[in-house]
Length: 195
Image (cartoon, rainbow, N blue to C red; front, side, top):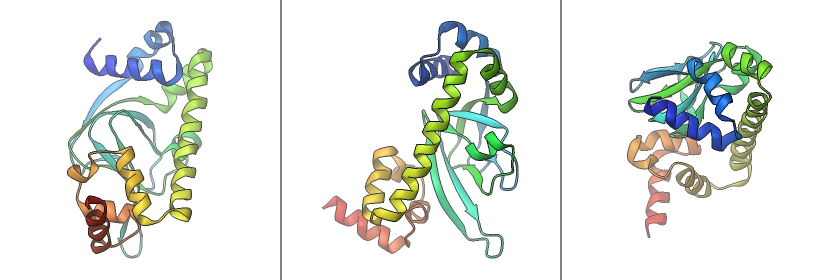
């Protein structure tokens, strides 16, 4: 088993208590993919066909306004997180946003078809699917609640908790976009927190 499959096996065993047989039966279905900085995991208006586990790197989900081209960052995925447009992956409907690598990245991924096959033949993989859906529902609701109930400074602190090294890895304007603020406001927040 190569390093990526070992990382995947450890993560999956902890995530949903899959057995050795569950993991062995899925091993050949998971593929490794390197994605260069600024390349895409999924494109806007395309169906998301793969579920990836980030082995190395950081991705952003962003929306590009069709009239202005203005980009709004919605979410970030980094190491040991699944990267996917979950609604598109499940419904087979095109997603409304892009998923882009922010640095040279590596994932290990499985196709929708192969994962669905595992759900149908392995009860523990079906449980994995439920836990995955619960996780992405939680991500979505947490993001909505942050935008409704938390200040930009509180959102910034929560972002750092989820991705501790993000400020050293991506340009500040991407973080400002995610927080829904302008760059100068982010600079003021960072100065306040440093004090």
